Length: 192
Image 1 (spheres, helix red, strand yellow):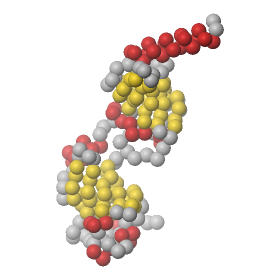
Image 2: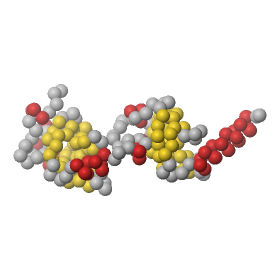
Image 3: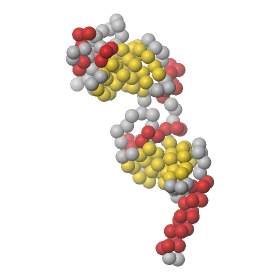
Image 4: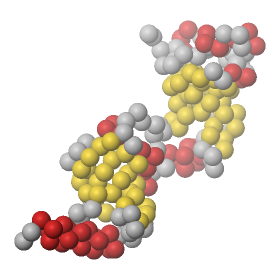
């Protein structure tokens, strides 16, 4: 057999596998490569891509936080493009949606503890549940802290926050500091 014939057989087998895939189908595969934009999974001789957005509900810095080459994963087929011979996969679709659980157990006005994960010019993102971050906008800080918001929140700080508003469709939570508590006390912050 020549190399050309092997390529044709390989191509025919690949097309057969691609034609057999259906949207919504759950497949098991082996992680074949990890790149900055996602994870490639071999599902029966065809590599499908799980993009970073489809790996997990949580924020991650790199796909290697979720998978390693050689791992066996169950994935959902999102799309099959026969013309481009590409398969889009999701791992996240098979995981519980933290927003559904959050919506069932949290309401506007609820006070809870959270950890500052990122400080931005307009406020701070605070992790208030596994996979859930809310925004504590600078406008929600006490008047005396508006000039130096970094005195109220730094990455890693633990704050008491109150849910000001929830938009479950856009998956956003607006936070404020509870009126009674004012700025967090020294006891609320994690040691450095």
